[in-house]
Amino acid sequence: MGSPNVQPEIPAPQPAILIIVENLPVPFDRRVWQEARALAEAGYRVAVISPKGRGFESSQENIEGIEIYRHRLWEAASPRGYLFEYAWALVAEFYMALRIYRRSRFRVLQACNPPDTLFLIAAFFKFFGTRFVFDHHDLNPELFEAKFGRRGWLYRLVRLAERLTFRAADVSIAPNESYREIAIERGGMKPDRVWVVRSSPDLARIRLGEPHAELKEGRAYLVTYHGVMGPQEGLDLLLEAIADVVSRRSDVLFALIGGGIELERLRERANKMQLRSFVRFPGRVSEEDLAAYLSTADVSVAPDPQNPMNDKSTMNKVLEAMAYARPLVLFDLTEGRRAASDAALYARPNDPADFARQMLRLLNSADLRRELGARGRKRIEQELNWDREKLSLKLAYQKVLEG
Image (tube, rainbow, N blue to C red):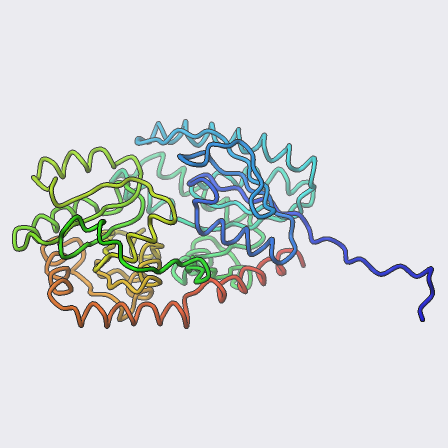
Protein backbone atom coordinates (compact mmCIF):
# COMPACT_ATOMS: atom_id res chain seq x y z
CA MET A 1 0.00 0.00 0.00
CA GLY A 2 1.16 3.53 -0.69
CA SER A 3 1.75 6.02 2.05
CA PRO A 4 -1.50 7.71 3.22
CA ASN A 5 0.34 11.05 3.15
CA VAL A 6 1.02 10.87 -0.59
CA GLN A 7 -1.55 12.90 -2.54
CA PRO A 8 -2.50 11.94 -6.09
CA GLU A 9 -0.89 14.17 -8.69
CA ILE A 10 -3.38 16.58 -10.25
CA PRO A 11 -2.48 17.60 -13.80
CA ALA A 12 -2.01 21.31 -14.34
CA PRO A 13 -4.84 22.94 -16.31
CA GLN A 14 -4.18 23.78 -19.94
CA PRO A 15 -3.60 27.47 -20.75
CA ALA A 16 -6.51 29.80 -21.37
CA ILE A 17 -7.31 30.91 -24.92
CA LEU A 18 -9.25 33.91 -26.20
CA ILE A 19 -10.75 33.83 -29.71
CA ILE A 20 -12.00 37.07 -31.28
CA VAL A 21 -14.24 36.98 -34.35
CA GLU A 22 -16.01 40.03 -35.78
CA ASN A 23 -17.69 38.74 -38.90
CA LEU A 24 -20.43 36.46 -37.48
CA PRO A 25 -21.91 35.64 -34.08
CA VAL A 26 -20.80 32.52 -32.24
CA PRO A 27 -21.87 29.72 -32.26
CA PHE A 28 -23.47 30.59 -35.64
CA ASP A 29 -19.96 30.92 -37.15
CA ARG A 30 -19.40 27.21 -37.79
CA ARG A 31 -15.61 27.37 -38.26
CA VAL A 32 -14.98 29.33 -35.07
CA TRP A 33 -17.38 27.22 -33.03
CA GLN A 34 -15.77 23.97 -34.20
CA GLU A 35 -12.35 25.36 -33.32
CA ALA A 36 -13.51 26.49 -29.89
CA ARG A 37 -15.08 23.11 -29.14
CA ALA A 38 -12.01 21.21 -30.34
CA LEU A 39 -9.71 23.31 -28.14
CA ALA A 40 -12.02 22.87 -25.15
CA GLU A 41 -12.01 19.10 -25.76
CA ALA A 42 -8.20 19.24 -25.67
CA GLY A 43 -8.38 20.76 -22.17
CA TYR A 44 -7.87 24.43 -22.96
CA ARG A 45 -10.03 27.03 -21.22
CA VAL A 46 -11.69 28.88 -24.06
CA ALA A 47 -13.45 32.25 -24.24
CA VAL A 48 -14.84 33.83 -27.41
CA ILE A 49 -15.68 37.44 -28.29
CA SER A 50 -18.11 37.86 -31.20
CA PRO A 51 -20.78 40.26 -32.44
CA LYS A 52 -24.44 39.88 -31.60
CA GLY A 53 -26.86 38.65 -34.25
CA ARG A 54 -30.40 37.47 -34.66
CA GLY A 55 -30.91 34.61 -32.22
CA PHE A 56 -27.62 35.47 -30.48
CA GLU A 57 -28.46 38.66 -28.58
CA SER A 58 -27.13 37.70 -25.13
CA SER A 59 -24.14 39.77 -24.03
CA GLN A 60 -22.67 36.78 -22.20
CA GLU A 61 -23.41 33.09 -21.96
CA ASN A 62 -21.72 29.74 -21.38
CA ILE A 63 -22.25 27.00 -23.98
CA GLU A 64 -20.58 23.60 -23.52
CA GLY A 65 -18.15 25.16 -21.06
CA ILE A 66 -17.07 27.90 -23.49
CA GLU A 67 -17.57 31.49 -22.32
CA ILE A 68 -19.05 33.68 -25.06
CA TYR A 69 -19.04 37.49 -24.89
CA ARG A 70 -20.92 39.51 -27.51
CA HIS A 71 -21.03 43.15 -28.57
CA ARG A 72 -23.31 45.14 -30.87
CA LEU A 73 -22.31 45.53 -34.50
CA TRP A 74 -23.56 47.65 -37.39
CA GLU A 75 -23.42 46.01 -40.81
CA ALA A 76 -21.89 48.44 -43.29
CA ALA A 77 -22.39 48.69 -47.04
CA SER A 78 -19.85 51.41 -48.01
CA PRO A 79 -16.13 52.00 -47.46
CA ARG A 80 -16.80 54.78 -44.93
CA GLY A 81 -19.37 52.61 -43.21
CA TYR A 82 -16.80 49.84 -42.86
CA LEU A 83 -14.37 52.25 -41.18
CA PHE A 84 -16.99 53.12 -38.58
CA GLU A 85 -18.05 49.49 -38.13
CA TYR A 86 -14.50 48.24 -37.63
CA ALA A 87 -13.46 51.11 -35.35
CA TRP A 88 -16.47 50.58 -33.08
CA ALA A 89 -15.96 46.80 -33.00
CA LEU A 90 -12.23 47.16 -32.26
CA VAL A 91 -12.91 49.33 -29.21
CA ALA A 92 -15.61 46.97 -27.92
CA GLU A 93 -13.42 43.90 -28.45
CA PHE A 94 -10.41 45.50 -26.76
CA TYR A 95 -12.48 46.43 -23.72
CA MET A 96 -13.89 42.89 -23.47
CA ALA A 97 -10.42 41.35 -23.94
CA LEU A 98 -9.07 43.42 -21.04
CA ARG A 99 -11.88 42.19 -18.78
CA ILE A 100 -11.29 38.58 -19.80
CA TYR A 101 -7.52 38.88 -19.35
CA ARG A 102 -7.94 40.12 -15.77
CA ARG A 103 -9.82 36.91 -14.96
CA SER A 104 -8.06 34.27 -17.07
CA ARG A 105 -4.59 35.58 -18.04
CA PHE A 106 -5.06 33.91 -21.43
CA ARG A 107 -1.85 32.62 -23.02
CA VAL A 108 -3.03 32.66 -26.65
CA LEU A 109 -5.17 35.16 -28.52
CA GLN A 110 -6.64 33.85 -31.77
CA ALA A 111 -7.97 36.56 -34.09
CA CYS A 112 -10.23 35.67 -37.01
CA ASN A 113 -10.55 38.05 -39.96
CA PRO A 114 -12.23 39.99 -41.50
CA PRO A 115 -11.13 42.65 -40.77
CA ASP A 116 -7.34 42.59 -40.45
CA THR A 117 -7.34 45.14 -37.60
CA LEU A 118 -7.44 42.67 -34.73
CA PHE A 119 -3.63 42.43 -34.75
CA LEU A 120 -3.73 45.73 -32.82
CA ILE A 121 -5.35 43.96 -29.86
CA ALA A 122 -2.98 41.02 -30.20
CA ALA A 123 0.05 43.34 -30.31
CA PHE A 124 -0.98 44.91 -27.01
CA PHE A 125 -1.28 41.57 -25.22
CA LYS A 126 2.02 40.34 -26.67
CA PHE A 127 3.70 42.77 -24.26
CA PHE A 128 2.39 40.48 -21.50
CA GLY A 129 3.67 37.28 -23.13
CA THR A 130 0.49 36.31 -24.97
CA ARG A 131 0.98 34.43 -28.22
CA PHE A 132 -0.94 35.39 -31.37
CA VAL A 133 -2.67 32.93 -33.73
CA PHE A 134 -4.09 34.45 -36.91
CA ASP A 135 -7.09 32.51 -38.22
CA HIS A 136 -7.20 33.53 -41.88
CA HIS A 137 -10.87 33.42 -42.98
CA ASP A 138 -10.85 35.87 -45.92
CA LEU A 139 -8.42 37.50 -48.33
CA ASN A 140 -9.29 41.05 -47.34
CA PRO A 141 -7.57 42.95 -50.19
CA GLU A 142 -9.33 40.72 -52.71
CA LEU A 143 -12.58 40.98 -50.72
CA PHE A 144 -12.36 44.79 -50.83
CA GLU A 145 -12.03 44.73 -54.63
CA ALA A 146 -14.87 42.23 -54.99
CA LYS A 147 -17.21 44.40 -52.91
CA PHE A 148 -16.31 47.87 -54.19
CA GLY A 149 -14.79 47.23 -57.62
CA ARG A 150 -11.91 49.65 -57.15
CA ARG A 151 -8.67 50.36 -55.38
CA GLY A 152 -7.46 53.55 -53.72
CA TRP A 153 -6.15 54.70 -50.37
CA LEU A 154 -8.53 52.46 -48.44
CA TYR A 155 -7.39 49.45 -50.45
CA ARG A 156 -3.76 50.29 -49.66
CA LEU A 157 -4.70 50.54 -45.99
CA VAL A 158 -6.27 47.08 -46.18
CA ARG A 159 -3.07 45.69 -47.72
CA LEU A 160 -1.01 47.28 -44.96
CA ALA A 161 -3.24 45.80 -42.26
CA GLU A 162 -2.82 42.35 -43.80
CA ARG A 163 0.98 42.66 -43.83
CA LEU A 164 1.06 43.83 -40.21
CA THR A 165 -1.24 40.98 -39.17
CA PHE A 166 1.08 38.36 -40.64
CA ARG A 167 4.09 40.11 -39.15
CA ALA A 168 2.53 40.05 -35.67
CA ALA A 169 1.32 36.43 -35.87
CA ASP A 170 3.28 33.66 -34.19
CA VAL A 171 1.27 31.06 -36.12
CA SER A 172 -1.27 31.35 -38.94
CA ILE A 173 -3.97 28.81 -39.72
CA ALA A 174 -5.25 28.74 -43.30
CA PRO A 175 -8.48 27.20 -44.64
CA ASN A 176 -6.81 25.79 -47.78
CA GLU A 177 -3.55 25.54 -49.68
CA SER A 178 -4.09 28.78 -51.61
CA TYR A 179 -4.35 30.75 -48.37
CA ARG A 180 -1.27 28.97 -47.02
CA GLU A 181 0.70 30.05 -50.09
CA ILE A 182 -0.42 33.65 -49.59
CA ALA A 183 0.60 33.57 -45.91
CA ILE A 184 4.08 32.42 -46.95
CA GLU A 185 4.61 34.43 -50.14
CA ARG A 186 2.68 37.63 -49.45
CA GLY A 187 2.70 37.51 -45.67
CA GLY A 188 6.33 36.48 -45.29
CA MET A 189 5.58 33.74 -42.78
CA LYS A 190 7.84 30.72 -42.37
CA PRO A 191 6.28 27.55 -43.81
CA ASP A 192 6.49 25.71 -40.48
CA ARG A 193 4.39 28.48 -38.91
CA VAL A 194 1.42 28.08 -41.27
CA TRP A 195 -1.04 25.24 -40.75
CA VAL A 196 -3.93 24.28 -43.00
CA VAL A 197 -7.14 23.82 -40.99
CA ARG A 198 -10.04 23.45 -43.39
CA SER A 199 -13.59 24.46 -42.43
CA SER A 200 -14.77 20.91 -42.93
CA PRO A 201 -18.13 19.63 -41.67
CA ASP A 202 -18.38 17.80 -38.37
CA LEU A 203 -20.12 14.59 -39.40
CA ALA A 204 -21.35 14.05 -35.83
CA ARG A 205 -23.50 17.19 -36.23
CA ILE A 206 -24.80 16.57 -39.76
CA ARG A 207 -28.50 15.76 -39.51
CA LEU A 208 -29.28 14.04 -42.79
CA GLY A 209 -32.93 13.03 -42.58
CA GLU A 210 -35.98 12.23 -44.65
CA PRO A 211 -37.09 14.84 -47.21
CA HIS A 212 -39.64 17.41 -46.05
CA ALA A 213 -42.14 17.42 -48.90
CA GLU A 214 -43.77 20.64 -47.70
CA LEU A 215 -40.59 22.58 -48.50
CA LYS A 216 -41.17 21.89 -52.20
CA GLU A 217 -44.64 23.47 -52.06
CA GLY A 218 -46.02 20.95 -54.53
CA ARG A 219 -43.14 21.22 -57.02
CA ALA A 220 -41.20 18.20 -58.22
CA TYR A 221 -37.75 19.60 -57.44
CA LEU A 222 -36.04 21.87 -54.90
CA VAL A 223 -32.78 23.71 -55.59
CA THR A 224 -31.06 25.39 -52.63
CA TYR A 225 -28.48 28.07 -52.07
CA HIS A 226 -27.36 28.67 -48.49
CA GLY A 227 -24.86 31.26 -47.34
CA VAL A 228 -24.25 34.97 -46.98
CA MET A 229 -26.32 37.40 -49.04
CA GLY A 230 -23.53 39.79 -50.00
CA PRO A 231 -22.42 41.56 -53.20
CA GLN A 232 -19.61 39.08 -53.87
CA GLU A 233 -21.67 35.86 -53.65
CA GLY A 234 -22.95 35.92 -57.24
CA LEU A 235 -26.66 35.88 -56.39
CA ASP A 236 -27.54 38.24 -59.23
CA LEU A 237 -25.98 35.72 -61.61
CA LEU A 238 -27.97 32.98 -59.89
CA LEU A 239 -31.24 34.88 -60.42
CA GLU A 240 -30.42 35.19 -64.12
CA ALA A 241 -29.75 31.44 -64.28
CA ILE A 242 -33.01 30.73 -62.42
CA ALA A 243 -34.94 32.84 -64.95
CA ASP A 244 -33.41 30.71 -67.70
CA VAL A 245 -34.36 27.45 -65.96
CA VAL A 246 -37.98 28.42 -65.23
CA SER A 247 -38.45 29.56 -68.83
CA ARG A 248 -37.94 25.91 -69.76
CA ARG A 249 -39.71 24.13 -66.90
CA SER A 250 -42.10 25.17 -64.14
CA ASP A 251 -41.72 22.25 -61.71
CA VAL A 252 -38.71 23.65 -59.79
CA LEU A 253 -38.68 25.70 -56.58
CA PHE A 254 -35.58 27.62 -55.53
CA ALA A 255 -34.80 28.37 -51.86
CA LEU A 256 -32.11 31.03 -51.35
CA ILE A 257 -31.28 30.71 -47.67
CA GLY A 258 -29.27 33.22 -45.64
CA GLY A 259 -29.07 36.80 -44.48
CA GLY A 260 -26.98 39.82 -45.33
CA ILE A 261 -27.00 43.34 -46.68
CA GLU A 262 -28.20 42.23 -50.14
CA LEU A 263 -31.23 40.21 -49.00
CA GLU A 264 -33.94 42.84 -49.48
CA ARG A 265 -32.53 44.06 -52.79
CA LEU A 266 -32.42 40.49 -54.09
CA ARG A 267 -36.04 39.93 -53.07
CA GLU A 268 -37.04 43.05 -54.96
CA ARG A 269 -35.02 42.03 -58.01
CA ALA A 270 -36.56 38.56 -58.04
CA ASN A 271 -40.01 40.15 -57.99
CA LYS A 272 -39.12 42.50 -60.85
CA MET A 273 -37.87 39.50 -62.83
CA GLN A 274 -41.26 37.85 -62.24
CA LEU A 275 -39.69 35.03 -60.23
CA ARG A 276 -41.87 35.43 -57.14
CA SER A 277 -43.64 32.09 -57.65
CA PHE A 278 -40.35 30.23 -58.16
CA VAL A 279 -37.97 31.70 -55.55
CA ARG A 280 -38.19 31.74 -51.76
CA PHE A 281 -35.97 33.77 -49.41
CA PRO A 282 -36.33 32.15 -45.96
CA GLY A 283 -33.61 34.40 -44.51
CA ARG A 284 -31.17 33.10 -41.92
CA VAL A 285 -32.51 29.80 -40.55
CA SER A 286 -31.71 27.55 -37.62
CA GLU A 287 -29.35 24.58 -37.90
CA GLU A 288 -32.37 22.25 -37.76
CA ASP A 289 -34.19 24.09 -40.55
CA LEU A 290 -31.07 24.14 -42.72
CA ALA A 291 -30.74 20.39 -42.22
CA ALA A 292 -34.35 19.99 -43.39
CA TYR A 293 -33.70 22.04 -46.54
CA LEU A 294 -30.49 20.19 -47.40
CA SER A 295 -32.09 16.81 -46.72
CA THR A 296 -34.86 17.75 -49.17
CA ALA A 297 -32.89 19.50 -51.92
CA ASP A 298 -32.44 17.78 -55.25
CA VAL A 299 -29.62 20.14 -56.23
CA SER A 300 -27.47 22.64 -54.32
CA VAL A 301 -25.75 25.60 -55.95
CA ALA A 302 -22.76 27.84 -55.21
CA PRO A 303 -22.82 30.73 -57.71
CA ASP A 304 -19.71 32.53 -56.41
CA PRO A 305 -18.29 34.37 -59.44
CA GLN A 306 -14.69 34.20 -60.51
CA ASN A 307 -12.59 36.94 -58.93
CA PRO A 308 -9.23 36.92 -57.12
CA MET A 309 -10.88 36.24 -53.75
CA ASN A 310 -13.40 33.57 -54.71
CA ASP A 311 -10.93 31.69 -56.90
CA LYS A 312 -8.71 31.07 -53.87
CA SER A 313 -11.46 30.50 -51.29
CA THR A 314 -13.13 27.30 -50.14
CA MET A 315 -16.85 27.91 -49.61
CA ASN A 316 -18.47 26.32 -46.56
CA LYS A 317 -21.71 25.86 -48.48
CA VAL A 318 -19.96 23.54 -50.94
CA LEU A 319 -18.60 21.24 -48.22
CA GLU A 320 -21.90 21.28 -46.32
CA ALA A 321 -23.87 20.29 -49.42
CA MET A 322 -21.45 17.43 -50.00
CA ALA A 323 -21.90 16.28 -46.39
CA TYR A 324 -25.64 16.04 -47.10
CA ALA A 325 -24.95 14.07 -50.31
CA ARG A 326 -26.36 16.86 -52.49
CA PRO A 327 -25.12 17.19 -56.09
CA LEU A 328 -23.68 20.62 -56.81
CA VAL A 329 -23.43 23.22 -59.53
CA LEU A 330 -20.75 25.90 -59.22
CA PHE A 331 -18.62 28.10 -61.40
CA ASP A 332 -15.27 26.56 -62.26
CA LEU A 333 -12.92 28.08 -59.66
CA THR A 334 -9.57 26.77 -58.42
CA GLU A 335 -10.46 26.00 -54.81
CA GLY A 336 -14.05 25.13 -55.65
CA ARG A 337 -12.83 22.34 -57.91
CA ARG A 338 -10.25 21.23 -55.35
CA ALA A 339 -13.01 20.90 -52.75
CA ALA A 340 -15.84 19.36 -54.79
CA SER A 341 -13.71 17.43 -57.28
CA ASP A 342 -16.02 15.03 -59.19
CA ALA A 343 -19.05 15.70 -56.94
CA ALA A 344 -20.16 18.76 -58.94
CA LEU A 345 -20.93 20.09 -62.39
CA TYR A 346 -18.93 23.18 -63.32
CA ALA A 347 -20.19 26.13 -65.34
CA ARG A 348 -18.04 28.56 -67.25
CA PRO A 349 -17.04 31.31 -64.81
CA ASN A 350 -19.61 34.11 -64.47
CA ASP A 351 -21.83 32.70 -67.25
CA PRO A 352 -25.43 32.41 -65.95
CA ALA A 353 -26.64 30.70 -69.13
CA ASP A 354 -24.13 27.88 -68.68
CA PHE A 355 -24.96 27.74 -64.97
CA ALA A 356 -28.60 27.19 -65.94
CA ARG A 357 -27.57 24.44 -68.39
CA GLN A 358 -25.70 22.59 -65.64
CA MET A 359 -28.69 22.85 -63.27
CA LEU A 360 -30.93 21.45 -66.00
CA ARG A 361 -28.52 18.56 -66.59
CA LEU A 362 -28.90 17.57 -62.96
CA LEU A 363 -32.65 18.14 -62.83
CA ASN A 364 -33.05 15.95 -65.92
CA SER A 365 -31.10 12.99 -64.53
CA ALA A 366 -31.88 11.25 -61.24
CA ASP A 367 -28.93 8.89 -61.82
CA LEU A 368 -26.48 11.78 -62.20
CA ARG A 369 -27.85 13.44 -59.06
CA ARG A 370 -27.41 10.24 -57.03
CA GLU A 371 -23.92 9.62 -58.42
CA LEU A 372 -22.59 13.11 -57.68
CA GLY A 373 -24.24 13.20 -54.27
CA ALA A 374 -22.68 9.88 -53.30
CA ARG A 375 -19.24 11.04 -54.48
CA GLY A 376 -19.48 14.19 -52.39
CA ARG A 377 -20.53 12.36 -49.24
CA LYS A 378 -17.70 9.82 -49.68
CA ARG A 379 -15.19 12.64 -50.11
CA ILE A 380 -16.34 14.25 -46.86
CA GLU A 381 -16.25 10.94 -44.97
CA GLN A 382 -12.77 10.01 -46.20
CA GLU A 383 -10.93 13.34 -46.54
CA LEU A 384 -12.71 16.61 -45.77
CA ASN A 385 -14.15 16.09 -42.30
CA TRP A 386 -13.58 17.93 -39.05
CA ASP A 387 -12.15 14.91 -37.20
CA ARG A 388 -9.12 15.14 -39.50
CA GLU A 389 -8.83 18.93 -39.49
CA LYS A 390 -8.98 19.40 -35.72
CA LEU A 391 -5.78 17.38 -35.40
CA SER A 392 -4.01 20.08 -37.43
CA LEU A 393 -5.53 22.75 -35.18
CA LYS A 394 -4.20 21.04 -32.05
CA LEU A 395 -0.73 20.71 -33.62
CA ALA A 396 -0.77 24.41 -34.50
CA TYR A 397 -1.51 25.23 -30.85
CA GLN A 398 1.27 22.98 -29.65
CA LYS A 399 3.61 24.87 -31.98
CA VAL A 400 2.54 28.32 -30.80
CA LEU A 401 2.83 27.40 -27.11
CA GLU A 402 6.28 25.90 -27.63
CA GLY A 403 7.43 29.35 -28.77
